[in-house]
Length: 139
Image (cartoon, rainbow, N blue to C red; front, top):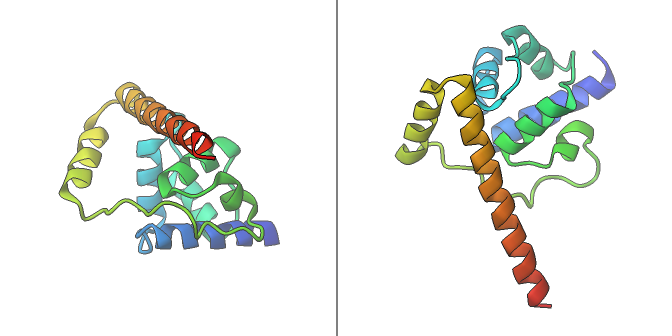
């Protein structure tokens, strides 16, 4: 295990814990990741390697992990002095609406899941742009 892999693993495990997923093993991590990833699914073995610090995911996979866990992708991949303490609060996974939404999305085929994912990304991007304009106007 490389030092870089170990540090990545530590950050991933911290992010999972902070988001309320501390008990996730490689099987559940792979499952939850694959629900959110539009590309080729990752294996349980690959997820285990991420958790053990034996491998670091590619940048596209890091972006998906970061979006899911609501953390900066740069922090997840590289760490650094800046932590993700100031990030938005994690979704309350005990909320029945959230649970139902995830269950519904999981029943969709890969194409429809990708459409939902792209729609959510668009809504977030539009909200971020509106917030930026609002903040710029308040200067």
